[in-house]
Image 1: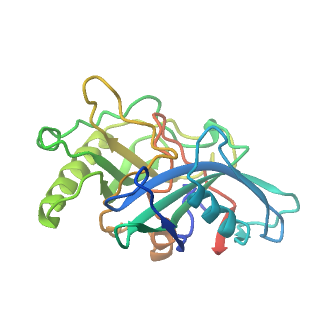
Image 2 (image 1 turned 180 degrees about the horizontal axis):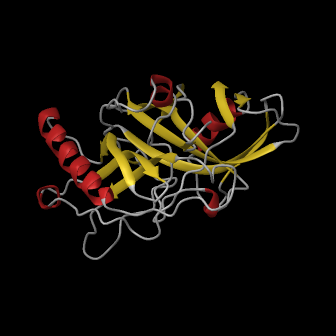
Length: 279
């Protein structure tokens, strides 16, 4: 029985070249998160898709999405006869190749059933009690720790591991590794004693446990100004190495890049019936 609660799907490596202007040049590797929707036909092909109209997407990125998404192919966990409407999240990355050009890619995608209810899912209401490490704060190091949790029927965290830590700054790798360890430890400590709401509706109510992917952000507030909404905005991107999680299979980890999911105050990830299998 499937108990994995996450919209994370197959990593995409669809690349194209984007000429940079002085106004939007990405000096270091950067990324943005896009939100949208996608309709998948019963045969696994894409009927239609769209991006959030409230977000101004760079022209080169929009061309990349338009070129690649229409050709995606999905498989389903169970037979379906109707169009499946999914909320879609795309991680876009940009890597400089010279002073004027960057290679942009759809490096990850996640999907959430468009008809999901929060009571179908394990979730935590409010902000998780993860303390920002003072050493990282003093050094102005920010980032996101991506955790994997196993939650029991009492809502307690039975197992937790940091799958990856992405930083928003660059530096010597040994130093960056120390900061990744600091943020991972703080995120794990913050969730170990948390109590989650367990599903009260839906097909997974009777499951003995639930596996959840959970992003824990550590973002600095400068001069009282909160961090910018990352959707549709280029931000520094220094992804960390993927760490093995002992209780997940290789396929579960390899097919689910952790950073293509939204970071929200209330953490809830739905299992998705549609899995992307071709680009």
